[in-house]
Amino acid sequence: MATQNHNVSNRVRENIAEAAGLAKLWAVLANLYHAEKNPTGIVNLGIAENALMYPELLDKLNKIVGLDTPNPLSISREVNPQCLQPVEAADLPYGANPAGSQTLRTALANFMTKNFASLHPVKPEHIVVSSGLTSIAEMLAWTLCDEGDGILLGRPFYSAFPNDFYARSKVLTVPVSFGDVDQFSEDCVECYEKAIVDWNKQQEEQGKKGRIRAMMVVNPHNPLGRCYPPETLKAIMALCQKHQIHLLSDEIYALSLYTNPSASDAPGFTSILSLSTSGLIDPSLVHVLYGMSKDFGANGFRLGAFVSQNNIEVLQGMSATANFAWPSSMADKAWAAILNDEEFLGAFIETNKKRLGEQYMRCTQILREHGIQFWDQGNAALFLWLDLRDYLPSDMTPLEGEKWLSQKLIDEGGVFISRSETFYGEHPGWFRIVFSLPDAEEGMRRLVKTLDLQPLKN
Image (spheres, rainbow, N blue to C red):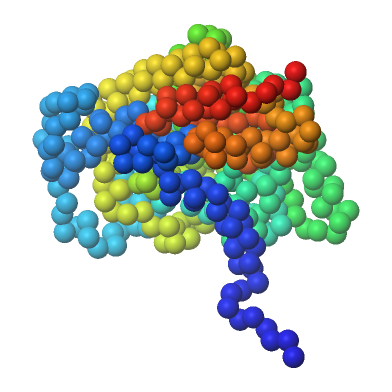
């Protein structure tokens, strides 16, 4: 007689299967390269982290908790006594608010009003803080959508979004293809609108209740590293108004811009907060996501912020589940102290931009010297989008070839980069490489060495 398995719920079995697909990544991270301790390890250029400002950040964080350990690479050797924030008894209890301390939300409000050129001042009550943007994305899916609803995303896009939306809330990601259309131009709206109409119609025909409830725009873009011009953002706003869906603007790379001589006409960053909604969209449909991970090089601090200036009910909905992702009081305190030190903050942002540009030029020079193609129109964020289609074996399908090349780079080259399929790319054979990691140049050398040994298709 068959027995029922009572170990786990049926709903979590999908999560287990999804997690199993990450086994290769965990294997890479368990064997990372170190010049002295593990020289035969794998160089990780696949995870979006910014290590270029680690010296300054570590120096500042140690000063925040009263451990002044000067670093010769730091921007400033001087410490503002008012910015010293030793650990206190008040930092040990739960705190007053699972959606972030008043101190941090006030600091974020001032920071975003200034640096995002917000048309209307951001206020602390407009903000919900959580333990990273992964949590924010999951909370948004729960708050804005019912099970089976969809969130629109233009391809390629950040690989974790589908799981963020679906793992617990069972909200679907609806990928949008652009073909020959420039996805940063106003023409992209036609592609988005077709996806909305087609998906909703398909749901109706299948007798399902799901509808597109929101559209996510990542600006600056991940993985293309380009900003959306204001005209395109306005066209997207009008589209969201037409279909009465929420516009979620993920601006986590907002201040990570750099100079790229090949993209001198690339637009700078425009926050959705800086644009007037008048005549375009009901402002209650417009929301912004931000975090400490990228511009501040602190993925491990797990701090993300959701901003909505005109929708109390959505803020209440986000706050209602905030206790499941309550940010650490120490991380909360550290980010607030950084944001409140305007002198340090200004120097940090400008130095980060300078180093990103220098690192971009070093890494792209290596690619050019070896004739490796890449999309050269980015001027923001931390990555390059490489075109390795010529290196795929001719006796395989493009997708099979992409998987094969990815594994070859790990096994024979000792370097890990992310492939197109994980970003829902339209064309197999493209790869994302992160150039802001400590061993980027070592990884680039390994990459080109492996590719130089791989016969080209043509």
